[in-house]
Length: 373
Image 1: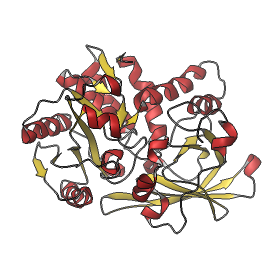
Image 2: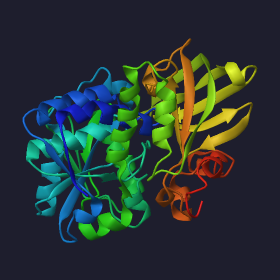
Image 3: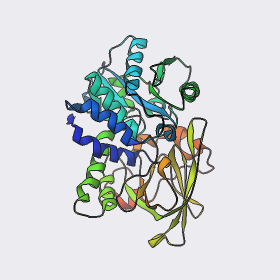
């Protein structure tokens, strides 16, 4: 069912989307500033996937590049609109809605700002259900759609259009251009009609992000536990369960920007029930694997999010630093993200790890009512 998004909804959506961003997706505060300006005067229609007509065109839009670069290379503002319209022109179509490429961080806000500026609805869906580092790592790709033509735009309004024979090739070309554009740009791709959107999208992610953010904000004034509230909200569809997997203090962060990605790892020494234990989280823009005492406990595509222990705020990888007291939350990804085809694209082995995907035990333990799990 469709609903209207107001300016007041942007804060909880940005907060919840940062949880889904698993440490990546870009700083949601920067994206929220873009969206606030666009939505200041009117509410934005959010459509359910099934409300998009089969013949209507939808264009996903997102930022691309290393999140660390975004801290210094602030967007001018019109880039995603230029990218969206450039792809319409390339295809000779008029799109009827905007869609997110991924659910996290700044990329939860960019489609909202674009839709509001163009007076279009936004679809409550995306192609990742979280954030992933490479542009072909989307359900749109996994289930057979072409990511090209695609348009990449920088802050000067320069447009580079790609037609590539595979979506992986698009990633290589677009990444190289993004690096030459200063390490961060905006991308439109995977233009599709409603019939393909219904078949390939991860549904309900915008509404889910809103519920997560609202859960945390609701308890702020009463000084109740924000992480407990977030955990309860995270144990609802369309995702498959959630649990706390570690509590501790950050003792080391290794981070570098290379090849257009922010890569590194964070080490956390356990406290409370995890005293004497250590967790290592490895990331490539986003958190990929959580290893406790040298044993993997949660891996992609399931979500690993580092939270500030005091206020429940997600900490993106560019803001991790020594001494932070944190809680690590894991959320089970929706079933569409765990098919054999999907795990070939974004399971742990796809990122070079030697172990296969193993569904975390907390899914069944905390969610016996979920059918088929």
